[in-house]
Length: 72
Figure 1 (cartoon, rainbow, N blue to C red):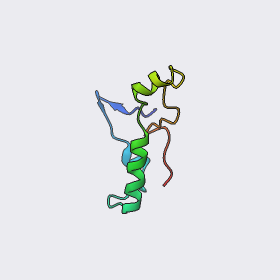
Figure 2 (figure 1 turned 135 degrees about the vertical axis):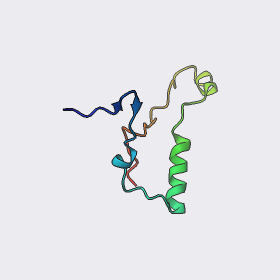
Figure 3 (figure 1 turned 90 degrees about the vertical axis):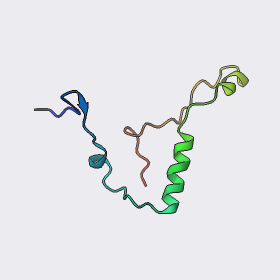
């Protein structure tokens, strides 16, 4: 039997299973790094697309929280 994350119409949270090393009390340095990565992980503004004549269309360094982990 295979495991599916959808059980009876609601999503089972897998975050405690995937990242057990992240403590609830973080150091200030780790919190700063997480905040910086959160700021970097956003789409580019529309005015940059207009300024560069649509040569830069999307953020190539966009990160998904489940596919790519930060590693700290």
